[in-house]
Amino acid sequence: MSDFSEELSKNIKGAVLAQEPLARHTTWRIGGPAEVMVIPQNRQDVQSALRLAARRGKKVTVIGNGSNLLVAESGVEGLVLKLVGGLTEWRLEGQRLRAESGCLLPGLSRASVAAGLTGLEFAAGIPASLGGALVMNAGAHGGELGSLVREVLACNLSGEQITLARQDCDFGYRKSVFQQGGLIVLEAVLELEQGERENGLQLIQSNLAKRAESQPLEYPSAGSVFRNPPEAPAARLIDAAGAKGLRIGGAMVSDKHANFIVNAGGATASDVLELIDTVKQMVVEKFNIELHPEIRTLGCSRD
Ligand SMILES: Cc1cc2nc3c(=O)[nH]c(=O)nc-3n(C[C@H](O)[C@H](O)[C@H](O)COP(=O)(O)OP(=O)(O)OC[C@H]3O[C@@H](n4cnc5c(N)ncnc54)[C@H](O)[C@@H]3O)c2cc1C
Image (cartoon, rainbow, N blue to C red; front, side, top):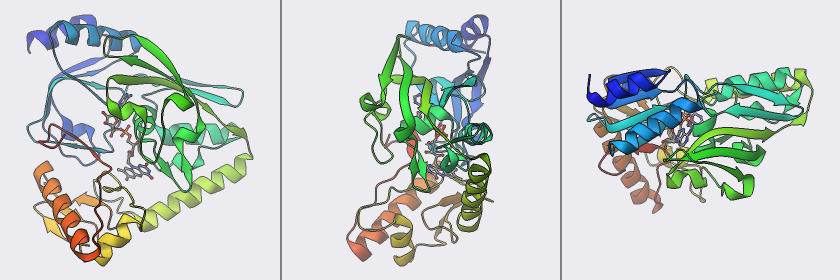
């Protein structure tokens, strides 16, 4: 155990894991070790970890549920703060849902519907933390998280807290101010509406059924790899360019949903990146349209 992880262990209630393989914390099941991973039990832990990392000049990386992340085999240096596992408190305040960033979206979606509220049904099949979903402005089935936000509580890398109103978050298509880095999402308040519990449950079921039918959920993946360009859905372009089923190493363009790259067994980050480049090239050659990845990379040369 390094000095750094020992010092963290002495000061933190949550888990401190040295050389923790990040493949265990990404839905792609890819990624080398975090120098030290901290899963904070509460906000005090977040503050303490940030303070200790700053004192030692360690880089800080925040992850949620790892469902949009490609991590290099070489791993990530410094402190990786994983907010899923801790920071999981939530409560309803009338039609508002106040939740910490480590809460998982499917659970929040079901809990809000069970309480007779509507608005979060679209999120039941997105395997994200609330924090990661705000960073990405996750959306599906015509809904987007950013549009529900009343306010977000975040802190900077010195631990100082700030509250942002929705208009400060600069939400756009899979975009938010939090992608610029430097802010850690701690909590958000979502504005929901009064709804019919049965209708909400039915909507969740039909959304989940659509996913099961169209997405390769049986394989590790990170969901859609590319943003949809204005011209057409990325999946349609990739399919028409003939890339479905294309494989490099253990990474494969799904033959069920062309915008998913699945880990078909033993895929590395390099396999995925090479496949991303190949798919981009095929789509440029066929349609002269440049696709841009939606996924975020860590430890890769192109971060
Ligand atoms: C099967 C499957 C289906 C999917 N379907 C959808 C879909 O329908 N719609 C959609 O939009 N996405 C979808 N995704 C992608 C993914 O779930 C989203 O992008 C999600 O928002 C990522 O959340 P996360 O908690 O996993 O974040 P992570 O992947 O852990 O992190 C994403 C980014 O946010 C940063 N981050 C995470 N938490 C915080 C925080 N608290 N503070 C500051 N920065 C933070 C990370 O550093 C990283 O840059 C899908 C993924 C899978 C595997």
